[in-house]
Length: 112
Length: 114
Image (cartoon, rainbow over all chains, first blue to last red; front, side, top):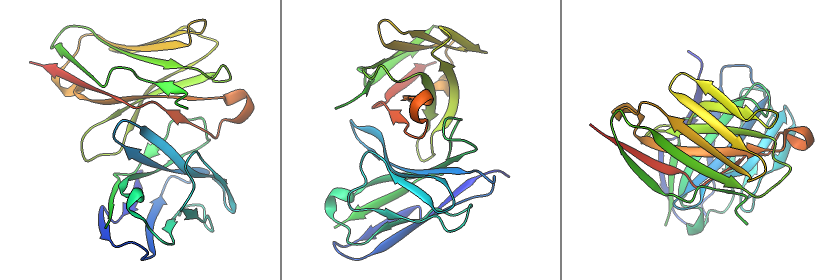
């Protein structure tokens, strides 16, 4: 089954404790991206990757890191989480950047 | 600076009637537009798209209209069904210049009452 898998679904952590949210897709997509969803703000792009070893900032990259060492994986790293990073996070992939995105089920992150 | 705006946070319609969801954009470089639907506890799923060379695209009960001069697009759902109750996001990208940046609106919660 074609899918984008994010883990974990829920995560509660404390300020400053490094964490990684994993994302994997099995569709051989070149393009992958991370979004955060906040009330009244919709979905905002954090980082995206056009292909292996090619990543770039989206609209709200501060406080986040990503890497794309393999085509299927695109982890989101929060080196020192802060409460303003409490949000619902989505990973997405597509064959090309402008084609329809396939989204993961989301990761609800709470930073205390 | 919100370049894609959905001014109605919510919309309620009766089953069988038409649902019209609206979206406005400010960036004249946007030339490709998409609508996504999101159910609770799930990721968004692609619904329909339209290129700026068209003013209408239809897929079953869903039709997207684009008015480039007004920088406005709308999604029509006819007839509306209770299963259409979800949050709808419009999105836009400047495909000719850089198709990698997809900008989403805030979303509109559609409720279809039986």
